[in-house]
Amino acid sequence: MPIETHEPVHEPGAEADLPGHEEKPQPKQLDVAHIMRVKEEYEEQLLKLPNVVGVGIGYRSAEGHQTGELALIVSVKKKVPLANLTPETTIPNELEGVPVYVQEVGDVSAY
Image (cartoon, rainbow, N blue to C red; front, side, top):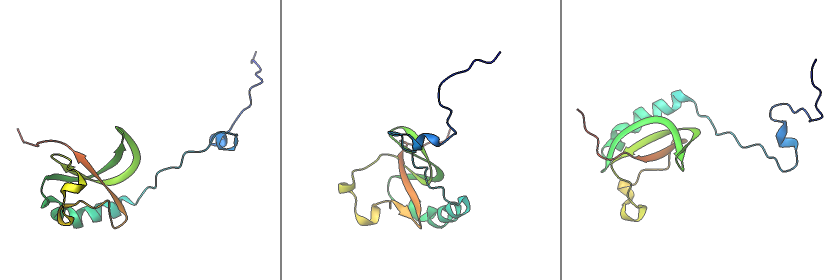
């Protein structure tokens, strides 16, 4: 025999209608083909910058957690404070609408 409860039933996403509950904004998803084209167009130029060891496509991270937002990932040996960079050696935050995330990876070597 089913047990009856007096708890309200909510449809997924209905929590946003309740007081004190706001729906979290979903990350903007870009067209993967566009991101790949931007990577191909700028990869060689980015790899010429000092400290850059790789360029890829992946999910951006914030505070150690993936945000779900696709981005161009620029891997560097060590992150350098912006004040220590020149305009010519600064990696942009965005390229053609694609967010750019700088990720420190340390020294990279093949075995």
